[in-house]
Structure formats: structure tokens, C-alpha cells
Amino acid sequence: MKGLKNPLNYWLPIYQINTKMRIAHFLAQSCVETANFSSLTEHAKHGGMEYEPSTKTGKTVGNKYPGDGPKYVGRGMLHLTGRENYDTYGKILHKNLIKDPNTVANDLDIAVRTACEFWKKKLVNRYADKDDIRSVTYVVNGGYNGLSQRQSALERIKKEMGIS
Image 1 (cartoon, rainbow, N blue to C red):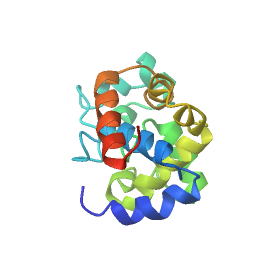
Image 2: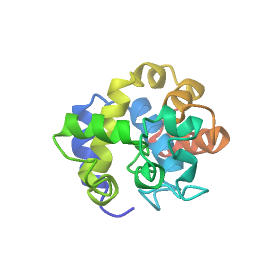
Image 3: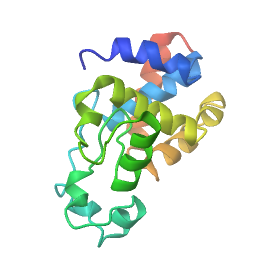
């Protein structure tokens, strides 16, 4: 995706995603979440209806009102999902992401920063430092969806970065 280089180079060190291993894990997860960096908005299988407040997943991500599912689908490098997350990370960044959730996909700084804030808040570096793809994936994804793709992406990135 064009334009991510500068925000990544700026924000990753600020959030201590600053070793080759940490960067490799962050990029591998981002690669899968963004369909190989082709989109900063999730292509939800059911248009976001799977995140409606009446669903288990919708409740988990803090959606409260009908329409929240499609409105607060995953966006950004690590697919910020759900009203509660848009509210939480918007407050951290001093942005009203509830009012304009598309900002997370349309503003590359916000796309990277929300992912970095999530990474920091969830202490993902501790798993990346151990090269523990399963734990990194679980924290980022809430499960193991796409684990084999994440492993493949990590292997490619590590090879590219000269990590053995």
C-alpha cells in the first residue's frame, strides 16, 4: 500500500516496535489483516452484520446499537473493530473515531497509530520478542484465524530482513 512507509518509520520506534523481530511480527500480522496491504478496511463476510450487537462477536467488541456492526468494521493496520475500540483508541489519539470511523482507514498515520496503540496496550512485544507467532496471532486476532498465512508472511518478512 502506497504511503505507509513514512508513518511506519515514524511511529514504530515511538511505540518500541524497534527490533527486527518486533517489526517482522507487526508487519506479518498487518500483512494478513490488510489482505497483503491492499486494503485498510476489512472485507467483512456479511458486510459487518456479523458484528451487530445481537451477535456474540458484536457484544465482545462493544457494539451497542443496530448498525454498529457495518459502521465499525475492522480498519487500519490491525483492523480496529467495534464501537468500544473506536471510542477507546479515538480518545487516546484525541480523534473522534466514533463520528468518523473511516478516518482509521483513510488517514495512514491513524491507521498505523491505532495498530501501535493496540500493540502497546496488549503488550504484544513480549510475544514477538520470543518469536511466538501463536501468541501474537491470538492477541491480535482474538483467535487463530489465518495462522498459516501469518506464519508464511512472517517467514517471508524475516527472510527479507535477514532474521534467521
